[in-house]
Image 1 (spheres, rainbow, N blue to C red):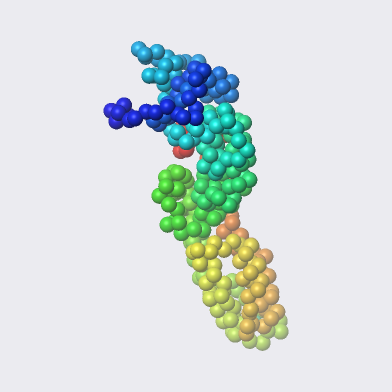
Image 2 (cartoon, rainbow, N blue to C red):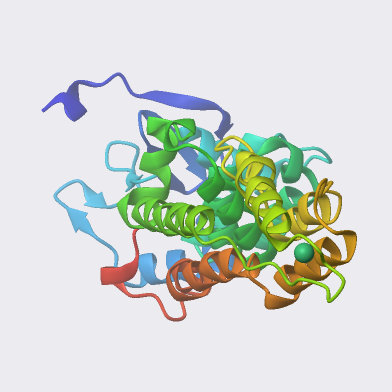
Length: 303
Ligand SMILES: [Zn+2]
C-alpha cells in the first residue's frame, strides 16, 4: 500500500520525550500527552473510552501503532499543538483557520473561540469572499455569511477557483449559482418592465416625459445595474442612480414623483430578498454548532 511506503518522520517541535500518546497525522509522528487532550476534548475522551487495538497493542501507546488522525493536514495539527504547548501572541491566517478546524473537529471550545475571534478581527481583509462564506458557516458568523454570500453571488462564477469550489462543496456552490441565476433574471425583468411615469398635473408633454424616462431607465440606470463586475445593491441603486440621475427633458415634478414612487415601491429590495431567502433557507442551516448539536451526516458536507 502506498500509505505504508510513505516516509514517516518524527515532528521536530512536538515529539515530547515524556509524552505517552503517539499520533500520526499524514506522514508525521507526534508524541504528546494523552491527558492534555482527554481533559479538553470530548472527542478524544470518546476515542479512548473505546480504544482500538491490534496485535501490536492499543493505538497510540507505541510508535509502531500510532493513533492515526485522518482528514486534517499536519499543519493543522501543528497549529493545535502550538496552541496547547507553545502559545504565542500572533497567529497567521492559515494558523487561525487550522485552529478553527481543529477546535471544531475535536470540540475544543476554547480553541474554537480563540480562532473565531482572531479570524473575525483579521479576516475581513484577508479572506476571499468564498472562504469568508465558508468560515462564516463554520464560525456561526451570520454577518460574514450574509455579506459574503451577497458578494459571491455578484461575482462571475469564474472568480471562484477550483480549490474554493471544492472547499465549499457542491451543495453550497449550487446555491450560489441558483441565487445568481435568480438575481440575474430579476435584473433582466427590470429592463423590460419600465415603471410608469407619474405625471404632474402641469406636465404639458407627456410623450416626451415618457420617452425620456424610458431612456433614463434603460441606458442610464440599467447599464450600471447590469455590470457583472459591480454588484449593485438596492441601496446603492436607489441612492446613486435614481437619486442623482439627471432627468433631462422630463418635467421636473414628474421626474421627482416617478423616482420617489420607484423607491417607495421597494422594487430594488426584491434583490435583497432573493439573497436573504437563500441565506436563511439554504446557507444558514449549514452552520454546524461546535458542540455537535444538530449535526446530521446527510446534511454535513464539511467534515
Ligand atoms: Zn410628465
